[in-house]
Image (tube, rainbow, N blue to C red; front, side, top):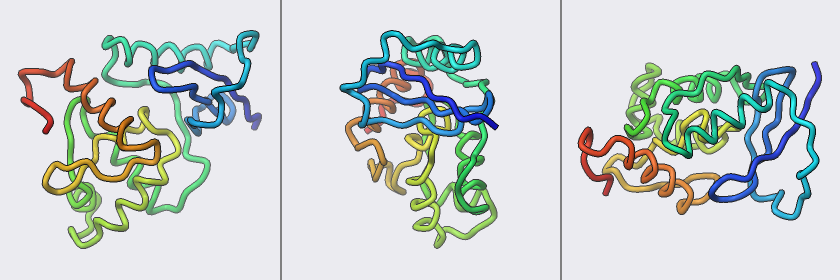
Length: 166
């Protein structure tokens, strides 16, 4: 399989999309601000992924339907990442909720937290929707400011459904 990359200017920095074949396998940030990608050649499947993310940021998309593949991670981590895909737009759950949903007890929440922190496809696989048991913001590989941004962004398109975030 062929690995390709493309770059996208998001509201909080340049994102790198990494594809394994035509499936998204990573979404990275923080290393690409000085990269000139103005002349990048974008294939249709790459454009689709970028367009879906733009629609998300524009408030026009709540569910992603691009093909993804987890090319790394343990079986446990991948089970967590797949479970994250089940958290609806604008909703939140705790690490212990995720543990319970995959058949583990709430004591597994730290292991779940480590797996969530290793999610290679943030936003698309919505790890930002996992919060502390009391609803508090906890770790996010891209920083708590970005996690807060994403949660507030989604809240803006679900107001009246679940009330205020914090």
